[in-house]
Image 1: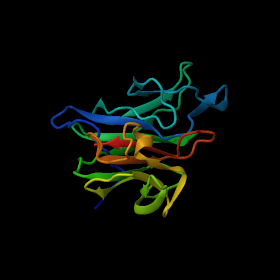
Image 2: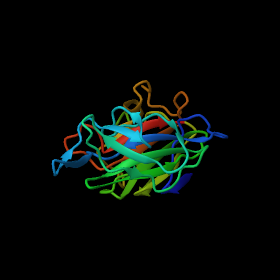
Image 3: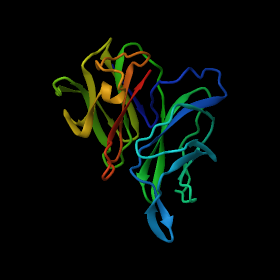
Image 4: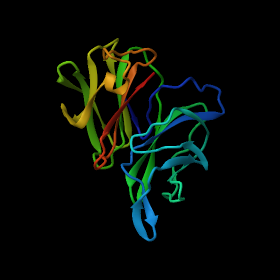
Length: 239
């Protein structure tokens, strides 16, 4: 079964926010570098941290960073990545207001001089194992994703696809083992685009899902970072 959420989408690694006065939000850095004008020249911000509506939510916010889900006042959010010297990108605002009691993933994407924030509303947790793709790569605006057998690094099977700004969730069955997920074109993964469950959570040594409380492998595809050891595909185990 496949569920698509265009512009908004989600994952589910937080407690219920029913009846809450705030939204639950995790913030993700999908921008390979943050640059701003320093002495009139575009330069990279070193060791960026993240503020949301003026409050620091992540003391380190490098490429691929994901915060835990945090309670955030409902409404439009203003995100700023800055460094200890006061250098910062221009405020990036969510395109839509967040609703109290709901759960979101907000991903900062883009490059100098234009950064933006993609907002994905998290879907309700479902029984069994599933795979999700958050398509957050402006330079790779359509991606396929699927599963593969970890022990042989073979048997790549496409499960779905997503366009830029969309979240797609696909059921993988009641339970799976020797399991990994990939992002790429057809059944060919991107470089560093095939992830075992153990590479996402080192405790999941048998590559099984559900694993403990987690039932979903969430895959995030970003623009690739030059010289970066990680990405452009990152993973997380969610409820």
